[in-house]
Image (cartoon, rainbow, N blue to C red; front, side):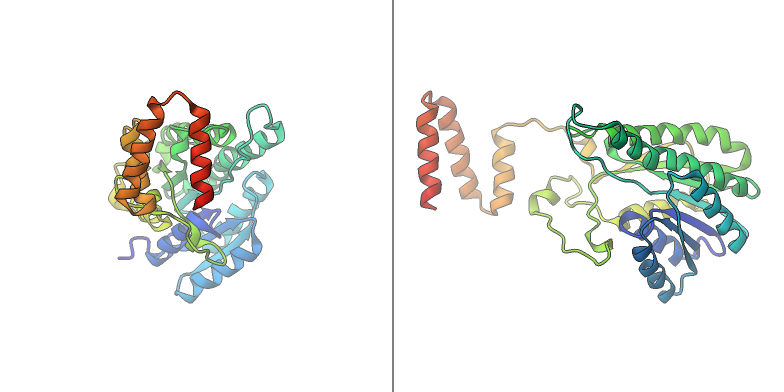
Length: 303
């Protein structure tokens, strides 16, 4: 099915990972694809791969945090294809994982500049051309906009801002026939969409922690983008859609049952998991913790 025949799609951060899968999916469905990225080597390789599959594609070097780069890139896309119909603001970077005391203002600014300001800049300069015929803008946010691990403040804030930017833009741009949406992926294994592809290091527990039974793939996100960008989704705008295999819907209480379940998956052996569970129960009731430590150390030394 070629839902995007003769349409022009811009994908930022499209050289690797989720962005590359999105560019490929939209291209397969008929889009002329423009990839914006700062990794020129990966971008060139990705474009050749797309062209080898019959997809009309171009690569443009652009740092989405630079207004000059973004403005020139959108001008280049329009001059080449005479349209911009779909914009996917996918470019993003992570943060250092350092504590709030150790995070620097430079790190904060760079993450916000790329992940949030970059989407704002790309939208600002794409709209100059999109408002002539309408279109769709899709922002790739994250479930980190709604739940966090420790020490992710710059990244989480940038993705939360992206969700808010989405509904603001949806209202502002509705008069031009432009729909704006955001997608918040959970854990996605991008190994196969790197250059060169990497071997996945997922464990059975990684997969089975998800109610859907597995960690996400870039193709999952690309499929949702393709639907939301299509005419089939013409009544959907201004919303964020979570795609995470059910994890954000999962209520978890950490207790011995959860630990035993996790160990049974890690070891692929319910007997070993049960032995660990029994050991935990005994340690909980035993007051001499130093002796427990010595016993455990002796056991480990014998293995």
